[in-house]
Image 1 (tube, rainbow, N blue to C red):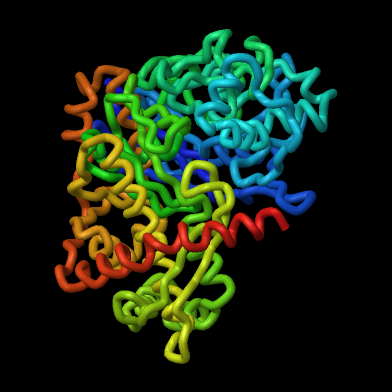
Image 2 (image 1 turned 90 degrees about the vertical axis):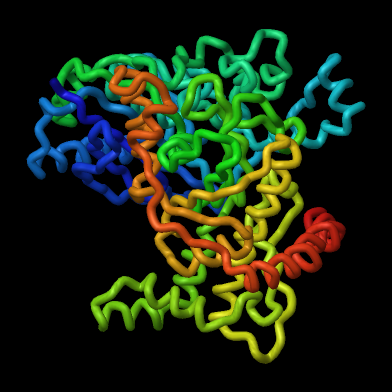
Length: 511
């Protein structure tokens, strides 16, 4: 009887096809790099939707070339990058390039939400937050600037919904993939009711939105057309999973709210899974978790580990050349760079808000580095980047614990940055908590496989699936002396920075 699970993971940098067994062992993997986006003007980030589909097909065919037996597969599950949107016509054909989550376009001057909702937001001091949401919504930009596209749109899809359509021929998606500016009720985890203010903020017909099913439920079956392109068996069940951050939390084994899941990816985040609906930041909802009916409380540093990539591109040529000469991975030399500088970076402190966001800390925020003197080198700057990210995520963790009433007592760390031993130890020291890697690097794919395993009944519930399919990898314990040093800097320097600099950021924003 087939019992292996295929997870298709469409991230920002690549598409991966991953085969897991019911114990969470990764049996096979095929990774296809993709260009994250193209930009036709400053701030725009778009991609041809066929790039995602073609890479998915190529990844699947790569598994068969490795000798993976199709007959061993019990089901497939899909997880994708969040907030990438695609307009399609009645035949499912894209009407324009996908707007990728990294896109920075805004639509200013939209009519504000009116009526009792508008009055309520004004009295609550939330009008600016709602206006920010309206300006950020991709649908508002398309409707305003490309009305002919909006008029021709049959369905307005997230990337997950588009790929689900390509796989099954059905316009359906997981509730846990609805992360973005659409009229979605995050508390009820369904489309908003007709009277909800979100329909004013992002006006659209209900018919533009797809049918929703919870994680672990069937989305459909692999169609003959999809089978021909991917090599997947016709009729193989496609089981609903969740967006990539949510499945990463699940794949890292973070089912309980006291376990914080850090993601060191293009966006750095800290997530905890809760059974209660809790807004860590008022009016900003928690996202749907990869477990039906649960919530993923998240604080995000928008450009996160992109800053590490930026540093390596701008200042890391020496390490990359040395690594090539020595036949080793560049990350080993970058870890040496971190270790060459003492904890606290000799007083250099970085605030990592290179790209502001509504969620945290605020739309006017910018990045800052303070404390420079003549001892500082590029190694200090590199360590300060890692420390600044850890400080920001610790601040997010403390805010989450305060709002939820549940202290975070241990950490799991996933994403590309988790492969750095130096970054892992630094994280444990900043938080003062043990930090563990998941037993497999592909945590988001494993989370999707867990959704499929529970949906098929291979495991009776998520608690059993987590116990059977996830394990801790290497664990880094905090050094008490180093944590004391970081705690002093965090409390007396880092936490003071944003409020002290906020008036300057606001002045710069106006200019």
